Amino acid sequence: LDMNTEKESSRKEILKAAREEFLEKGYKGASLRSICKKAGVTTGAFYFQFENKEAVLKEILDPILAQFLLLMNQNVKSEFEEEASSSDADEWMVEMIWLHKAEFQILMTGTAGTPYEKVFETLREGLANGFCMFFEKYGIAKVDPKLLDVLVRMRIESYLAVIQKDYSLEETKKLARQIGEYCDAGFEALVKLLKTEGSEKLPKTEYQKNGN
Figure: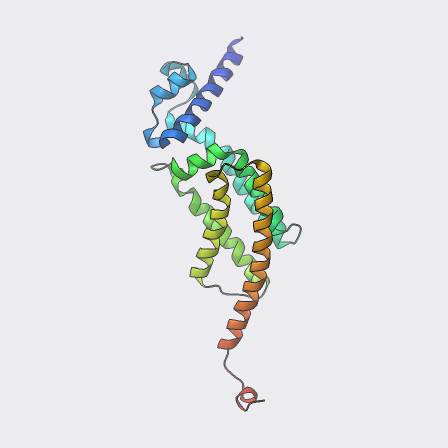
């Protein structure tokens, strides 16, 4: 092997070992010595490749996060412009999560004490903004923050269920499509309900007061 090939090979081994270590012990519990042992490299070789443990975590998670947030924004846009249904969007999202289970598991349970522990706040904000766009599109200008919070949490939980169960990719995609159909129908029903509740709160006109 030439020097560049050997360097690239050891980098891949370090990343693979670090992914396993973070998945098993979380960032705080992960040992640099253990990562090096699993990767079959010395600590000197590690520091030749990475500045520190956080740099390894960053290289593992950043590409996946960027891809996920981009997909989420594209899905909101596609749904809003009616180029795709909720079931399409959910299927694309959960497929990506399924393909990167380890990384998302690390994000869920292994990033305490790092900037990544707040990543789900970013996800919640993105989903909340998406919901607000859709409500406004269908004539609901103001939504109860408590309702919005519950809707966002339900959506996120449906995504995370993918990495908490040992489903196959085909099973995962089928479930995502079924949940998406449920969400579409539920959203339409919710919009009707909110409009009805809103109209009930409007002051009656003199014509209505007279029983006409």
